[in-house]
Amino acid sequence: MFCPKCKALMYPKDDVFVCHKCGFKKKKEGSNVVVSKQTKKEVTIIEDKEKTQILPKTAIKCPKCEHNEAFWILRQMRGSDEPESRFYTCTKCGYKWRED
Image (cartoon, rainbow, N blue to C red; front, side):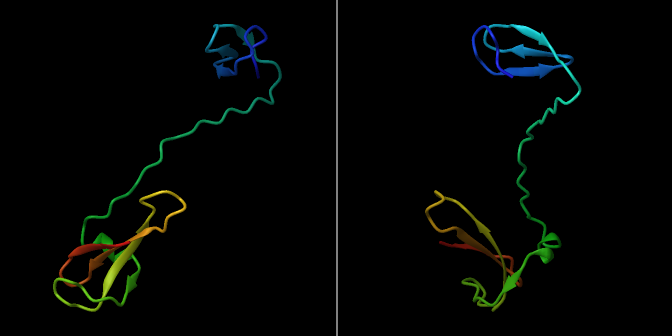
């Protein structure tokens, strides 16, 4: 819904719509009003050795202990037109490294 005075977007608050720009208020009409709220995205960082057991594994040589298996995750670190970075954690010694 848009404000009839200043044409800005009006936001629902309790049983009225309120314009954040000029303060105009209008009572909600009907019962078909749907309000959606965005929540902040959460990022889970896995640090505990026991919790890393849920991650996928791959055959790759650890640069520290030369063990041949590691957990891996992908993260988009740069722009969407650039490839993602792969992060590895050795299943034996826990050493972490990155491959771009």
